[in-house]
Amino acid sequence: MRFAQSRKTWKMAACAAIAMVLGFAAPAVAEEPSSTTVQATPASVAVGDPVTLNSQVTCTADPSGQLGVTFFDGGEILATVPVAPDGSASVTAVFQTVGTHTITASYNGNDNCFASNDTTTVQVSQDGPTPPSGGGLTLIYTNNENAGSNNSIHDENNITVTNN
Figure 1 (tube, rainbow, N blue to C red):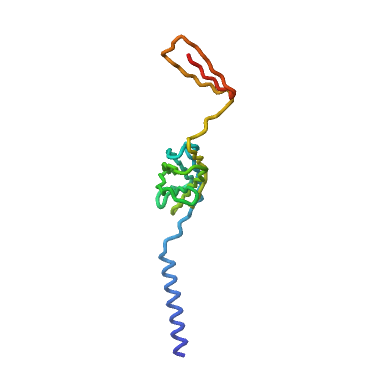
Figure 2 (figure 1 turned 45 degrees about the vertical axis):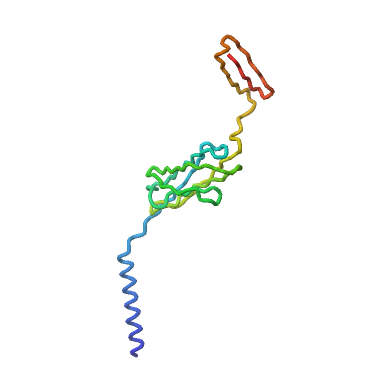
């Protein structure tokens, strides 16, 4: 009988403790969905040239605070930066390897907003971006030493160079 009574007392004490914890606990924070976009400017560069990675987090609540946005190049972390109250976050990166770099901006969330992410690509070449060809692009070259002469050169890609 003594064992049954102490067991009953223990159960009541445990229930009372749980009720106290639940009664004094802060209510759960309602989290809002978020969306993230990322843009690389410029999207095509030479090895060693800087690229600005801009991220924009959209949430009905304030997305700033806590862990911010982490920028990745594939699986490698480039940087983690704070998110401004307007949802913006940016970092400048320099790539040392040729190829297509997949950039992910991962918003880490906060007490108000759920995490989200987006990806873009940066094309890195040894010599920089390839200029557009064809399409009637006109390049104008001015040589002040030969004022009065007007010469044009036209090549097979419809690119014209004019000396005015």
